[in-house]
Image (tube, rainbow, N blue to C red; front, side, top):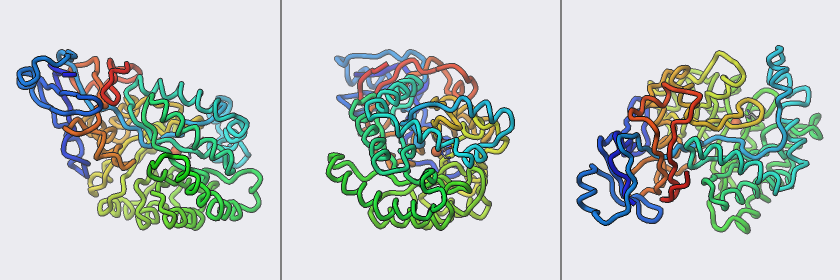
Length: 415
Ligand code: NIG
Ligand code: FE
């Protein structure tokens, strides 16, 4: 299939965009690209490609923006229940961490998720995934973390693999048993940490090798935060995971700085996520590392907080910046990357071009998929959006509407 006559074809070619190089969209005006089976096999000017492939079936993108599908590298897609009542409590003055300390928050979603079957989890997550696809997300990372005991965490991992095999969109799973201290370990948190390290992680590795059809091991993530996991506990878990061969992620500096970024960089984490309270010294370290800084602007927005990731400072320090939704039932029930871009332009002070690169090629790097997806280049998987607008800056500029007209996943027009 030949997509042609794109007003602006955003290729995002050239690999990960570090520091101030962020925002290179690689625009081809009057652009075209050729898809064969699941792959992009040619990219160029419309006149050239129409001449080269005269017999190819055509899709006319007449003056529109054509770009890579969004990659959402941080979501909590699989859960049961909702926290609408807590939203109201927060509006009346209770804080997120107070609600968690009182046994609500993540722990309330854990109660609902433990009671759900794998089928129920898959079905609910699939509905959310379809909405994300409609808004242009073609690949996402998704975490467990609402089980906090082995069987229930495993059910979430199974749900993620099943959802991925349904093929609605592509899912890259993360194991987040270290999301909160479960109620039954409230008085002995270090025993839960040992349970994760001595039982769950080795068991997960065995289970994965037997059941995940030679897929690479999932990421292991920790919520390093007051009221969740301390810095030494987070280190114990991430070091154990690393020894077992798992790639690492961390939730750090969402509410308080416990030193999680420095530690995660030292351990070679693939990404460090949230980064609201990150110090200038740690931001400087990001500039010398391969670790991707993932900002989640829906979270402060969802919590009505004033402070966001110091994204400009991360770019000044030459860090690799990506954007994600953090889709979850507590702080940010929103999987719309167009809205994430709109927030990033306003509160992270990114240009639309920077936000788009952070939500595509750099977001792909945050899940180690930058060689396969995140740009429109020969050899890459054909995950493509056709927007209903003629100028890419409408992403960011407009919000609360869906600018995605067509979605192509693995070379097929799915919407
Ligand atoms: O990334 N901070 C920890 N985890 C999620 C929130 C999860 C929840 O509240 O259910 C986050 O913001
Ligand atoms: Fe999160």
